[in-house]
Length: 51
Image (cartoon, rainbow, N blue to C red):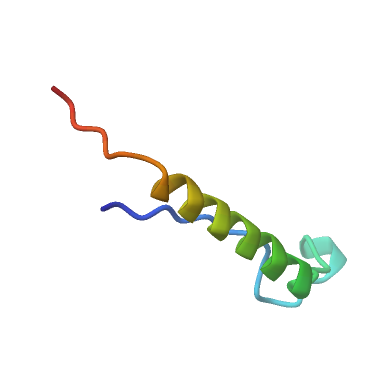
C-alpha cells in the first residue's frame, strides 16, 4: 500500500520574514484532522486494480 505524505506547518520558530510565526498547536490539530479524514476515506475505499 502506498503512503500519502502531507506537510503542514513548520517545526521551527520562523521569523515573520521567513514565513512565521507558526502556531504549532493549530498545525497539529489540522494535521490530526486530515490524518483522520484520509484514514476514513481509505477504510471505505477499495483498491483500484487496472484491468
